[in-house]
Length: 151
Image (tube, rainbow, N blue to C red):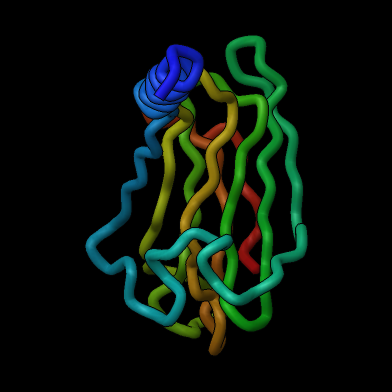
């Protein structure tokens, strides 16, 4: 093995190590009743479904113009995403526990915005079979900045 090959291998190893060391780490969280239905506990890209943007809301927090997006699939359920958000914001997806059209109890799944990136998205919430879901942008010490309608 020549010096060029060794140099390339070492360079590849170092750059790969740095990529893993500096990659943002997701920080998902959820209520005790989540996951409970099919596809819950999985990120949207780990399901066989295609999601469509159903609702979008804009909000301002600490000088950042943040977009909250709510995506839906009739086969898997829904997920929420925030873009252009500071690191002390979180995105939530609430999912009702029953098919009651007037939600009174729900579970949630959420994700924090990690340092070095400005977005976050949740795992899937199964709002099929009459259950409903909604998305929320929460910043600071728990301030709900904006929220979508139940869907």
